[in-house]
Picture 1 (cartoon, rainbow, N blue to C red):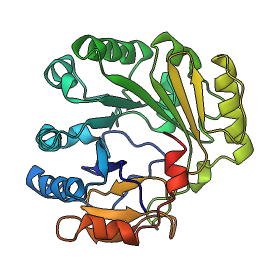
Picture 2: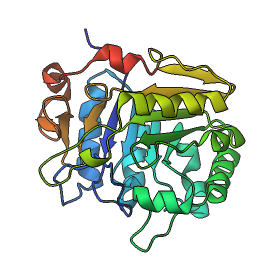
Picture 3: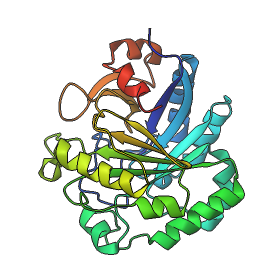
Length: 289
């Protein structure tokens, strides 16, 4: 029987102010569903009785004009909410107004030097990036506003950043969770990131070097590590291990091809029934928790 304590990722919009070369958040959805539609989806998901947490993602979710309405509709059920963002739109005022509403805030950080960030595409069209100091200020203010908040860093490892190492930044800011993800090939016929894929050996080299900097020994079979306060999650395999509802409102299967297969329209069809049709590897899901 499928686990009763699942985290579901709501990708509330596809568009983003960055243009990361490895990005897999391509749902073929030009329009943005309004908050009322996401409330219907959230009700459908939570009513299944199988969900313990909702994660808000994108694209860049802070670009959704009603994102906090969506967050509040989830919190009204007593369900904790997390957020993954590039951080560029997270102002001081936003943090003060909204920082207490999240259990976890994750920042997508693949590199910290301006040159490498721009090569990755983790920058605006004008080339603007976030400095390590600015990330640090955001983290400090979030913890000041919400002492219980967990700070997570997500790092996608590709050919672009495979020789980089963010361990010193992770240690400096006592990050609670550092998730390292081997870039997965995505190809929907329009967007393709295969040119910057890394091998298992290249990914393992990145993880081993990062863990060594944190004083932890690497093991190829291991997913979870503990480095002081920081939990490190090293994921080679992603497909079939996440529950995703795309910006089009569909529960998505990422195992059948190099992009996504629509399983059910969560605005109209029963989410619990959709789960039964989804290819979902529970062992892979559980390995990171």
